[in-house]
Image: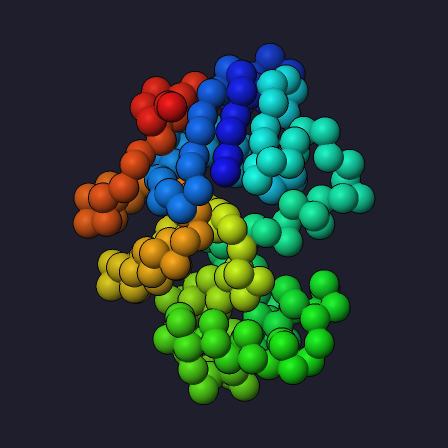
Length: 219
């Protein structure tokens, strides 16, 4: 599903990633962890094509991301959901509209949008809340909307960058339970996190970075 071969990313004299080799199989749930600046976010951004490697090879669902032209990144992202720490919801759009946006950009018919958005709002525990606006929701509820938006296309891969970083303990657990349920449906899930407690509560494979190098979890 995801394969990294001698992947490196340099910013001047700084190695953000240094000769990383990694394989994540279809349907796996993995944590990406390490100190701030260790390379976690850099790797995730490479996976969805936001930044390009300086050297090495990066395959996602058989697509060579490093060689994929920017105009074709949509081909990669159609099969990928992305969840951010700060939600990135549009305040002036309703919950339904925020989630539907991911389908509108690919030209999905209105009936399909209605059906899929209703379904994923049910999955994340927000059934019947589609007419509300993000700023009327709690932080945990906003993150659920962000997760719903990420999975409405039924992606093969879900990337979550510190998805519980702005949440309290109970809300963080709720979001992790949703990610776990999504993984059980067959989606490959990668979660970047510093939260040792959550990793212990929801034990999965751990990929650990330090100074841009992979120190644990390589295979």
